[in-house]
Length: 177
Image (cartoon, rainbow, N blue to C red; front, side, top):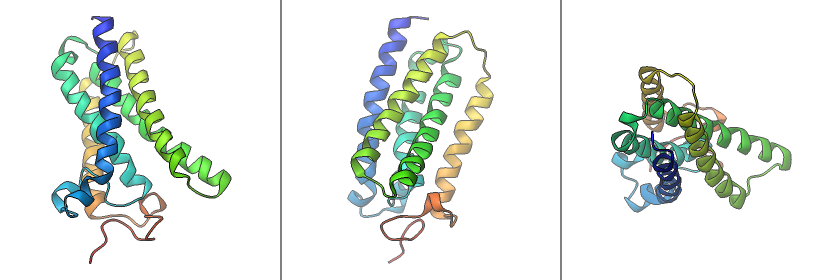
């Protein structure tokens, strides 16, 4: 396990995830609100839809990284999975905590928290790769697939819960014109 190679990959992963996640915020609109891109890009301003901006780029770097270094790094898949989970949880907890305290969302803070979540997730993944923990690749794969399926299903069949509510329109999921 080459520590520098893994560290460098994690840095590139974080940069890539930040750039792609930012672009995914606009892809749905740029593609004429295409249903075929809705499952992996934000379709509204809800917290849930913004989690896609984090999950899909980090999933992509996990898959690419597994092909590049992960096959020879036993804890890679588990570490990246946990990094994604921590990033998602950070966004949810941070957003609801700060908006609960000040009573409103501030776009600059939301954007900064996205970047912080990506960096935190990639850092945690790196530390876990370098640690002595044991993990199960099958469990990690199942977790990533469950999250993926949830994003897809809830894009088209959106529950009426606060995390799915678009604060701009007050609606849930895709707005039907």
